[in-house]
Image (cartoon, rainbow, N blue to C red; front, side, top):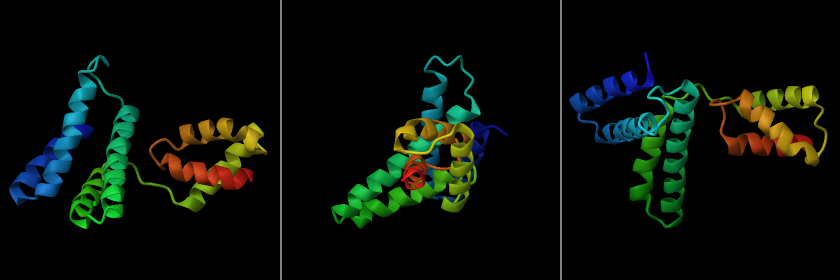
Length: 148
């Protein structure tokens, strides 16, 4: 089942259960998917594009929640975090830091990365391999620690 079909089914369920937070989150996904489909990408959206879109939406929600929290507005931060949780349910299983360390060590060995000058090359290779399974911030911190 495609992401669009999954979202539509979840929207129906959220409407039935009157879950406004889920409904708002799902409608945001649907809206972004429609924008992506009509942006000239020949109508069909790849799984990679869907994952990037979902990651972007989760990141936006988390950044908004962080901003609200620093301003003492927990009443606004909590719904953003709830939406991020709902949206991230559509993402592939996220890897833990230990699993990321193993991938970084293997890829670094394969491409011969040994110092901070190789950071860009290693980041690119690891990011490509872990697409959708880890966020860039976590990958970056693990790569920096490995090369230090």
